[in-house]
Image (cartoon, rainbow, N blue to C red):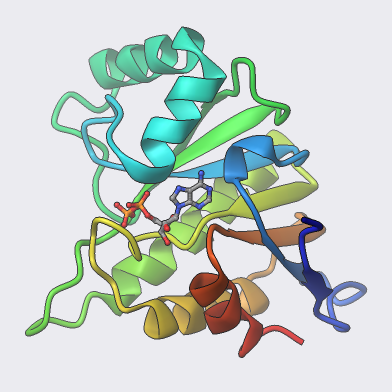
Length: 184
Ligand code: ADP
């Protein structure tokens, strides 16, 4: 089945990335960098994280272990991002970011926005032109999809970055529909 794709007509030339949404699997994306919805241990988990390590092979995990040993012994803080190479994935880099767990009685939106901003900052430092994001925190971490989509799109749209294209890669139709409300 062909993936539906949809592009924001805006984007460049104002230093803001062009936004695209696509239904698909982030591990198959031909982008300079793909973002992993990691956990703070950097040692792998379920969902996107599991898929990236499974398909990308052991080199990614080895680099994550090195990062832990050298800089993130207490874990990568929520809202931060760090890069490794991408092993056997088509991408050049994986940018690991730690989304906040959704909390009913606490507004953690700024931390979720920070994941997108920090990932773009790291991507810019790497020289990545295209970056693919999953819907961070909307799986195991329980963030309501519509709200997670709004925060993702607003944050990326406002980012000043050298990244030229941000592609949101949505795993299922519901997630695609949530993002489609904000892109286009
Ligand atoms: P988190 O722990 O940040 O919630 P998850 O990996 O559990 O991360 O889920 C984040 C989002 O990614 C969910 O919407 C989930 O459906 C989606 N997802 C899971 N696997 C993939 C994949 N291979 N490619 C893209 N999105 C995926």
